[in-house]
Length: 155
Image 1 (cartoon, helix red, strand yellow):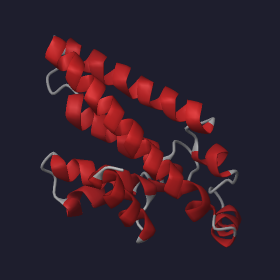
Image 2 (cartoon, helix red, strand yellow):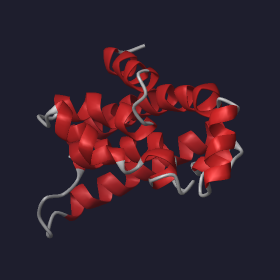
Image 3 (tube, one colour):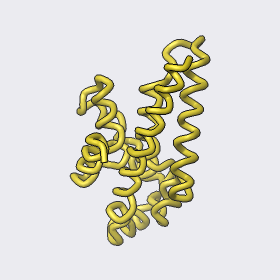
Image 4 (cartoon, helix red, strand yellow):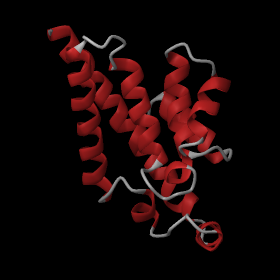
């Protein structure tokens, strides 16, 4: 397990959201302060603010893919294409492992209502499932970053 994955697991176990846990260790490496990284990614936890949509561990990883490979100029089609390709690969691999990239599907509970959120907390679903999603997202992210760096070197 990489140091960033260990850090992500620690952050999640301390009570930060899955999106924060995945995003922060990698964002810091890219020069974003930990405080800013945590603030930027917090809104994505619980499937985007407890709406049960796209898994926070997935969104945190996708932000890092963009941070590493995304375009900063409108005419940089190569960066755009590479970023989209890598993001799609990440989502495909995560889905192959877990059957979905949707938070509600992954934990088997809707977080949209106070009752659903209470049910998730009562049944310890975040600890039961999301810790593993954080770890897998980091592992897949590191594979994707390596693949992206190879593609950039070939270009």
